[in-house]
Length: 464
Image 1 (tube, rainbow, N blue to C red):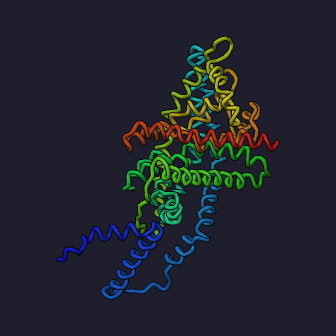
Image 2: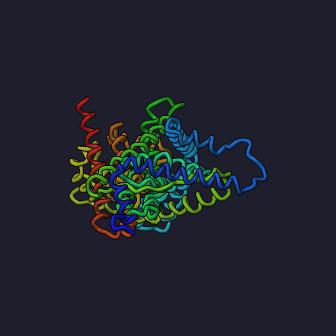
Image 3: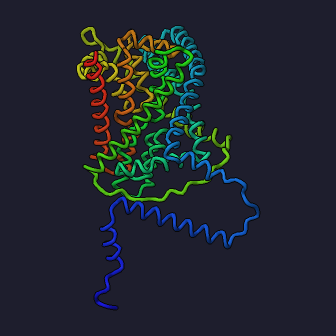
């Protein structure tokens, strides 16, 4: 071999250094396309087909669902349809569950009184723990029982990989990995599950970006809060015929805001703390499948809905107990909860909320599902939750405590963007093995939530 001949590896490195990132992507795409084209040509020569398809539905559907012109509008329409069905379908069963559970409460109260139970014990067990559980179950169960099967249906049909395909270029431009679109989709069910799904990303840098930003898509624990407040304050602002459509559209807008924040923060991290060149991957779109409805119902209701509801119940019971104690132990004519809320009031006022709302988010750290029950308990007289038999009753309670449309907007945005729940933070610590990045994962979204709500509040005040 001549001494002037370079090592093949060195030649490849030189070529790579001379090619820009954009050209690398084009080269990769053309190379993958060439491989698949050659594979198809070989298959046509050696494979004998028993019959020929008259019409290739998969390719025709992909031309529509993955088009840069029609792909995104269809994604938004399907997301809106899922939320509309969820909001519309959850109203009646939520009201029925509330009537049933609070009906049991009255019988339990009668039983406690008949055996001369101390008032404090009745308050802790019934007015604190049971009412919190009743609210969590009646508000969370119907939406999840509708949302999860619909989301699983889209997954079983093979549509979610098309969503990942559509979002791949956006994540590449944000300096992140294209597979982050898949982990983000998992976050809609549970952010902790989305964190675990980040294992599919090989690059440690890009995996960490995906973990730090997964919180910006709302999980099942935040959807009930977003749906309930949007139904009351956004849907309630228009005629009843259009209320669910407008509320569903607004929840979709919040989801898009979460995706936008995911891309922006991913881009910012990739340019500052986690610099690097995004790696490439090839996503082969699977064929469309006929949905297996029994399998969908089982996995969505048993593996997801019941599992998440069970976790919420385990967390909600002690949270209700603690909140009742804080709301009923008084120091100088004010409850401990009121003292804590008064301390947070100046900060909360800057972002268009009040101290009780901030306290609800702080006490709701164990699980996002319990933020609304804690807030309701904090607002009610003598520290016990009102027997709210409808979302409208909840809205009336909030309005009586000074809520406006700006308050509702800030609460929804803060709920969307604020710190992850304790389970998600623990999962981040377990997956990345760093207390520093886990603390960053809690502080970074909270600061973004504060800044966003502060900007909106001050802008509205200036306009007024």
